[in-house]
Image 1 (cartoon, rainbow, N blue to C red):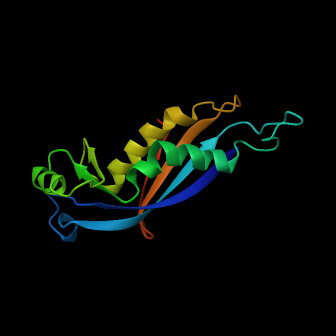
Image 2 (cartoon, rainbow, N blue to C red):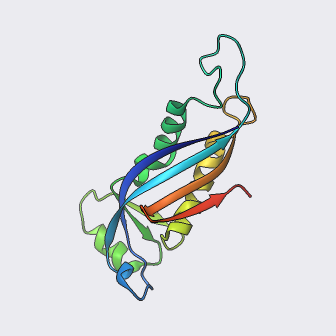
Amino acid sequence: MQITRRLEFDAGHRIPNHTSQCKHLHGHRYAIEITLSGDVIDTEGESAQGMVMDFSDVKRIAKTELVDKWDHAFLVYRNDKTVRDFLATLPDHKTVTLPVVPTAENLAKIAFDILNPAYQDTYGNQLRLERVRLYETPNNWADCIKR
């Protein structure tokens, strides 16, 4: 069985070598969908009886491990020195430095890699992270699927 939980967050970024508008500082209302698979819990009396995982637990883990860290932050590539230096001049600015250019594809992969161990068989029901879908806009997204 598979379940999916969607969360949203706001973040800024730029694609430093892009030849179009994305080379400029800008932001998005991102959405992230987390798809988990596992056995439906059938233990009588369990809080999660009839579920793969309680959706509130899916949300809590995603917020703790990723969303709260990226929400209202600027996601900057570690080699984008100009922007990193600029952001350093802003007192208490929320900046997340990434090892790769913050494209939707790279962010989806980073999110998968962060979330995968957090969900790993949490409920003892063969729970697995199957997919992270990251929407950069309502019409554009990237999927990172279990390898």
